[in-house]
Image 1 (cartoon, rainbow, N blue to C red):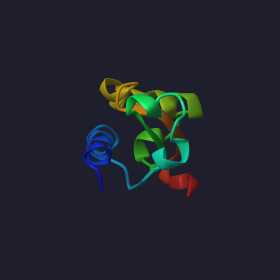
Image 2 (cartoon, rainbow, N blue to C red; image 1 turned 90 degrees about the horizontal axis):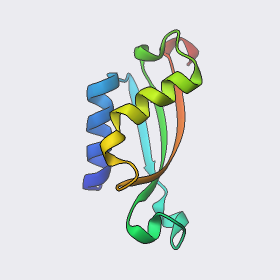
Image 3 (cartoon, rainbow, N blue to C red; image 1 turned 90 degrees about the vertical axis):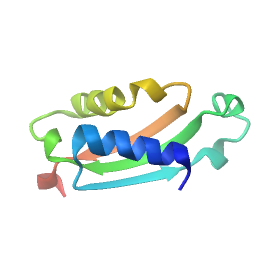
Length: 89
């Protein structure tokens, strides 16, 4: 796992205490695209956290983006998110 992915996971674990977290680096699929040319990555995230209870999709994304704000857009160019509360799984 790359250092960048370790940083992303650590930030999400600290902020959201997820029951599960699956992070995939899809940067290789975007070689030559905007963002990738500057070294920023494309990632696919699936996360389950009790902190998402009673929060809509936009609110969940805001929590995730807030946890990663210092990495965007420099380290993270694109982030595809699937966020669930434990009851939704």
